[in-house]
Image (cartoon, rainbow, N blue to C red):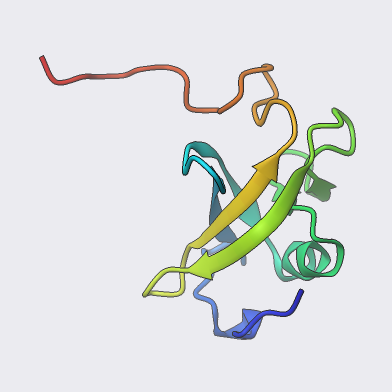
Amino acid sequence: MKSTISFDKFKLNSDGMIPVITQDYKTNEVLMLAYMTKESFEKTLETGKMTYFSRSRQELWTKGDTSGHYQYVKSLDIDCDKDTILAKVEQIGAACHTGNRTCFFTRLAQEE
């Protein structure tokens, strides 16, 4: 896989990372939000598996290496400001570390 835009053109946060919204490529269901560094972005392109940077552990992590719940990249897009990546993936198993399909399973508010 090859990127059409160099990582150096992305607008990074103060920690040198870019947020990634990850969606199911078939249903568009939002699965999770994580962050990438240049190294994790390049590894994602190289392997075709979503690789993020763990802010809590301060290390790269390929989604699924521990759980077997891999995310296979179908497409990567960047928003108009070049400060957020949208990843469409084939999700194997649960995306959330809690075992839920998505990390967004807790409703905060709803129109009445």
